[in-house]
Image (tube, helix red, strand yellow):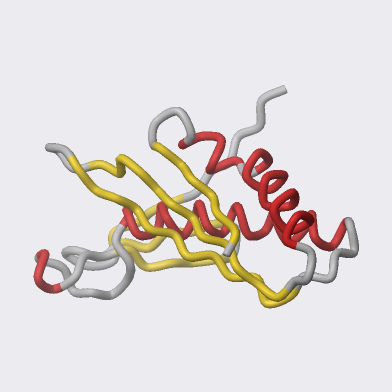
Length: 133
């Protein structure tokens, strides 16, 4: 059965908009050098944040469910832009944290990668890689 998620984006200035998700709000804009007011992240940056956030929440849920001794989890996401018009052609995610069992951390990263809605959506459109530091 399909589910639908709806968000809203409304213009707030000549170059800025506000994204609204439930009771949460985020500003979207361009840097000054690209004709914006730098009131928020650009859409492409937010795409990377969305991927990282989706992956991170899924990973943290997997860690909690297994009561794994993993703390201070961090994800660095790097998107490679190419083409005309530009698009992300590759996205690399590097996961780190405090843990003693590398195999367990790698397994949990794989579980989160396979369960993340954003990663599943992007996987056929862009090269996605996940590595554990």
